[in-house]
Length: 278
Ligand code: KIV
Figure 1 (tube, rainbow, N blue to C red):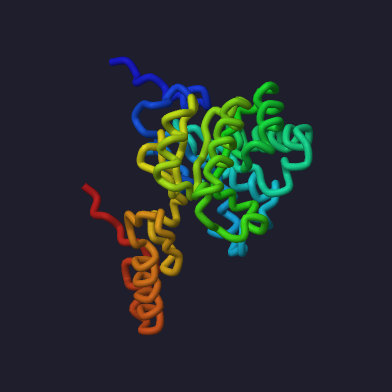
Figure 2: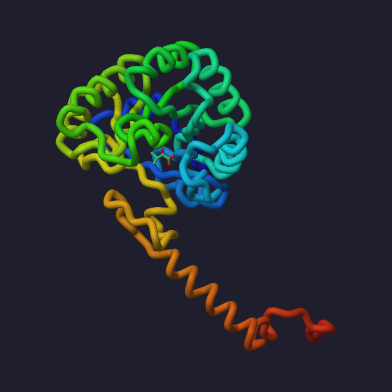
């Protein structure tokens, strides 16, 4: 019997080739165990800068650093087998110039082993995306609501309604024309996301966008219900692990206080019983 063929990691070019096909399944991961859990089910695993809020308790993604992205990127890559891994470029690491973006993208890829990066911005980032892709850095773009611009956008609002529609369409065309292999559409109205997905030659990955996108992404902690107090409209909760964890921790606390944990099966006997010899 011959051994099964080795699993080959998905590449950015494989993701590009999935345009218009079976929808792309994408989730975030920030640690090795979660990377191992999501990898067999996902086409794309994103080490998102949402880790600043989700893991580190920051108020926004603005305080996330290159060092944080590299540390979590390395952890995720240790659990990665087949999904295409993409790492977010943190705020301040790419906006200054294409050269700054190239230096930091290369650092992210070289120090983690991930095959691609994601950055936020549309028309104003097109020159940078073209510069990176021409030099061997596959780029996933991110338009619509771009959380790193929360202070200039005036909050985490839906983008592309009414007068803003033309801007979001121009952003989508610009990043696609510049060579991005896929684009995240965040908090873009359904009809607009549908139009963009139909018009662009690259996969569109929706979050709070449309079922017509070429794929969907969610923050894994959100869809697992790890937070009880964060319920954005676009997140479907597939589990309530926050409640389950709360109940488990309360039960542990009660057991410790009542001296019922550890029980006999959790402690080590002073002498080992000899098994009868045959
Ligand atoms: O940082 C992140 O997790 C993201 C996704 C929400 C798309 O950018």
